[in-house]
Image 1 (tube, one colour):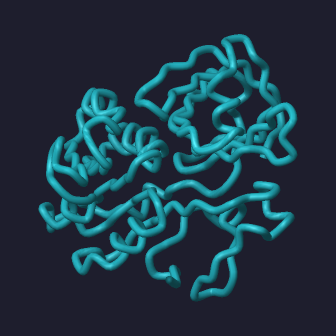
Image 2 (cartoon, helix red, strand yellow; image 1 turned 90 degrees about the vertical axis):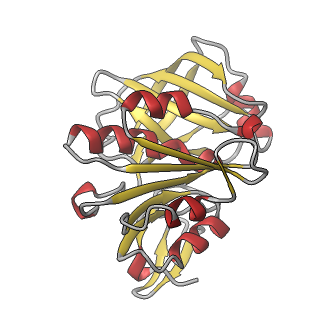
Amino acid sequence: MKQSLFTLEHTRQLTADTYELVLSGDTSAITAPGQFVNIELPGKFLRRPISICNWTKEGALMLLVKVVGDGTKQLVRCVPGTELDVLSGLGNGFDLTQAGEHPILLGGGIGIAPLYGLAQRMLQAGMTPTVGLGFRSQADAFYLEEFGALGCRLMVATEDGSLGTRGFVTDIARNVPECDYVLCCGPLPMLKAVHALPQLTGGQFSFEARMGCGFGACVGCSVPTVQGTKRVCKDGPILYKEEIVW
């Protein structure tokens, strides 16, 4: 973990409530896709945890932010040049070495954020992941061109059928039964449904939780596992399929 100042370089609106933020600063503490940052906002007692979408060793940090409250609304309204106090390199990221021969990446809504950097690094490592993204409707879809530009196999599902397959990311997975290992991120009901897919021999699941500190001190984001209680911020946010208790 490292605390440092990042400068907001660019903000781009993707949908009615989703934004891309590009910051510059010290990214040396970020070591794996799936980690997150914790951002301090003026007037807010608690920092806001945000998944890392992508980063470079040269100091670029990309975040995808969905506006869900006053804190995220304040964050996306920051103007370029704003300095933000950031805790970086938090949590444990995805482990590419465990992904097997036919991995599938599944993301729901803003949960697709960490999958972009993950897909990029898997491709760089010579892996060929299938990517399945789920949204409520075509109007809520984002980052399809960015994933497509990576060159990975991309499949999309929407709940209303306005784009791609009508249904959920679980329907995407069922259409590619050869994909037997999953790396996924999204809301809890989605993770639970993916976990139940009989085709999966294993997987890594990125959990969300309300966090007080973001580095394991307050124990406020604890969840049960077969090994006992684990903290999403410190021991996660990535948990393995075999250790998850619903």
